[in-house]
Image (cartoon, rainbow, N blue to C red; front, side, top):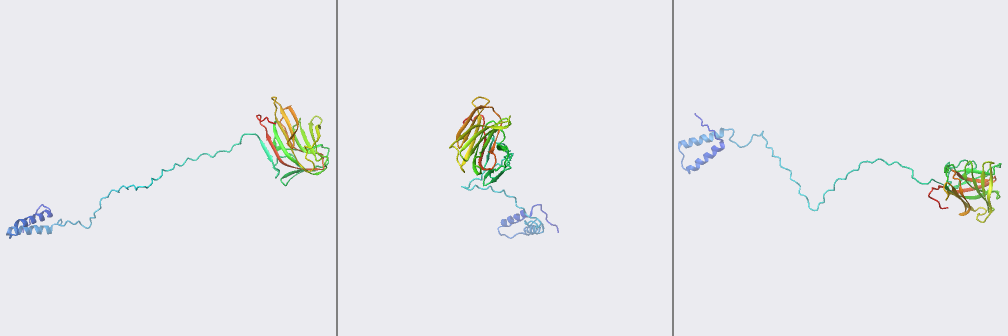
Length: 289
């Protein structure tokens, strides 16, 4: 039997069949019409494209949808801008602070600032000096090597009699060099003496000697001070000596020598306690005595 072939898709054939049925308006079909109808149905059943359903091996992949842009929420603060991290900088190197040299010693311990303190002890936050053994020395000197050598400076210290002979003297030395030196000493009997050193004969000359109420007697604490400052005349130094904040001696227009300071006492059999030592360089601009 001959088969009817058509190049139309099955869906178009079904639509054509429906149109034919509708056109007949319910009338009986002729033999040719029935034959044509059967051919169309047979073709639709035999064709592998008759079903619109895809084969199981074909999976529909949904087209990617665009990600919706988030809608900003009202009253929501915007995130802060990123903070810039500063680049690391080099660690600064410590430098010496400019200014005058200062040494303060409360004598709480031996810091190595004193030249020769063989007969010294550091106790009770003070320096106890003496007693020295009998000798031919008129003045026992203990220089402050930690203070260095300066032309102009201010120095002060407290001294207190502890034990020994009351006719001996104790105090300070200043202006000490190979060619000069001064010694200010007091006794518990309220005397003070100022001596000047003469290197040519290695001896001390008394340039001032007073029995004075300025000196605190007995076990009272006395404050010794000296100020060597640039003189009014260029190239000179003026000297001011103080005892218990009282100016007791001055000398002007002295040669500008680099000198040292220290502690001192006369002879032997004497014990003294020192405290509150201060040494400060005086720069050229500071002229007030």
